[in-house]
Length: 147
Image (cartoon, rainbow, N blue to C red; front, side, top):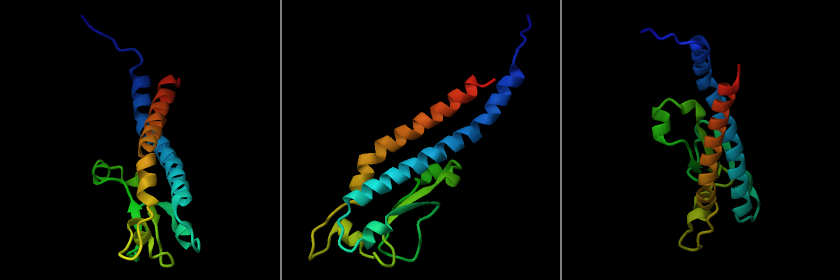
């Protein structure tokens, strides 16, 4: 008894398209999520001069260096170990002008904490992961449905 697999070339063509489509979908979801997270952080941060609020941002790759006041969230090491380091976003607060980001977030001896960074992350973390999952599933379904 022999089995003939009809459509094998088409199947392999679709499988070959998956990594690129999933990568594009994940990057778009990550950009959208980072923008949403930055907006939430900016809404939560206490504003005096506006320098700290204006320093909250995101970028692809590592956060800016050279300032001890930076708070940041980046891709976990496990994601980097699996080869997804091209899909690394860093969300950060603080720069040379707003060096006091950590002091506001965690407080000092003279002032109490006014957290804005980590509460926003905890509030949005689940929605970020579900947004990425939805985008991955959508990309897979689009490739499966394509001719």
